[in-house]
Image (cartoon, rainbow, N blue to C red; front, side):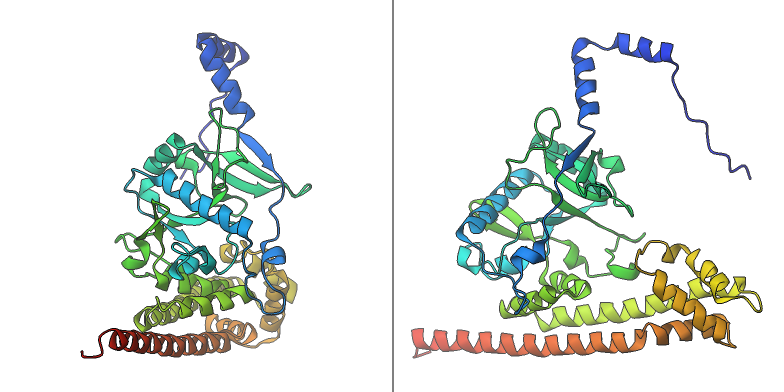
Length: 392
């Protein structure tokens, strides 16, 4: 099979000049503007946790009046950006918790400062989304960090090239008529997540596991006469558990306190985590089968490490080197270098079983809290009803 790459057309200098001569003056100006703003620089993003999370309680600090005004304005501009479309999109992250807590009606119910806006969108709707946002003054960009300066490099792309990679991630940024990034909009630098689907059209979560279709559907909410779309509470819980930062744990407590998440939602999350555990074991078997097939007798730990590090699954993480070196050492010391033998070493070394057990226990406790919260909420509603209509 011929694996040679197709030749790339490179116009000659004469051909380039001929092409330029055909362009009108307006087209030449537009072309120069696009080239000028193809890549744009922004200062490094600020450390969110440093300024917004209390170091003792691990909770979000109460928002200031100015931050509340900014958040309200961001939601107005978000609604305006999607106004008139029927695109399937919704907010991601802790902003959902604030609105489930009633921040849409009372700004005092924001659980903290939400400087960033994250949304989920459908892959199949990216072309329509690009047109919608362009008409509203926004463009698609891929963002990376400049290793020397720490600045963010925003590269303008169209919908066909709008996708995450190991070095760049998707952003929507406000732009002027020339495509230059604006910094005077409340809604800006929106993180975008694609709703991934399998061949059957089912939405996917982590480890290629299917998640409920209801999690991929918007929960409409009106704020300041603008419609925005929330995530399903079950999806919010699921990804907060995956993030696992200190303030994600306290966010989960705030989510439970809203009374908007059900025991059924927690059961969905628990089932998905079990499926992820099984999928990860199956993926581990495939990876370590490749490793076992390439290990030769009396291979050194360093040689085994080279075999392991060549696996595509281990080339994405930047913090895996030390762990993989330790794994290679333990494999070199073991008499059983079969697929199952290597898998057992990895499971023990990385405490896979115990971590999964901890997650089960965490989800069980959350379910108990959700049950108690919702029972109390129901009791309070019944008391309120009785006081209003004692004869009933």
